[in-house]
Length: 158
Image (cartoon, rainbow, N blue to C red):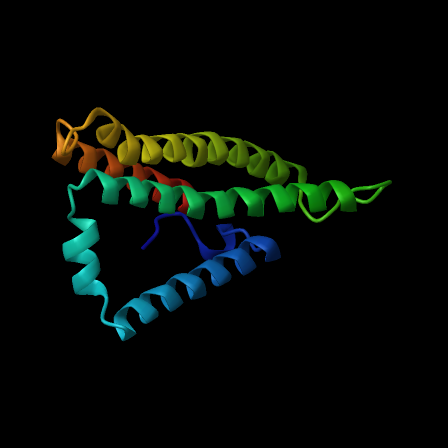
């Protein structure tokens, strides 16, 4: 089914497995709560398909906050690694994994926290400051947000 890829090729690092299980359970819990409280229709009509610049700005800020939590998790892992790797001890992460977390932390904090914070605030404030009812191209504004969400999702699962 997977060609020459076997289950033995999947890394069995306890940190990766624990994170994967925790993220999966957390995601399923959020989906279950949205389903239990019957919020799918409201979210679809009022938020997911909206072209209102204020709602898109708020969604940028929400995604920036979610990615900020991921950036904090990476920062905590890096600091724990530095604290545990004293003397001859290797620490909790192998060197190649630490390098990956270090790089991912930088990318996430710049491209997926700082930039959407600025974009979200500009989406909310600038049309109000210039006295416009909306942005010039509201669908393009919405499209850019959802392309950003797709990119953030790819970074989160990588």
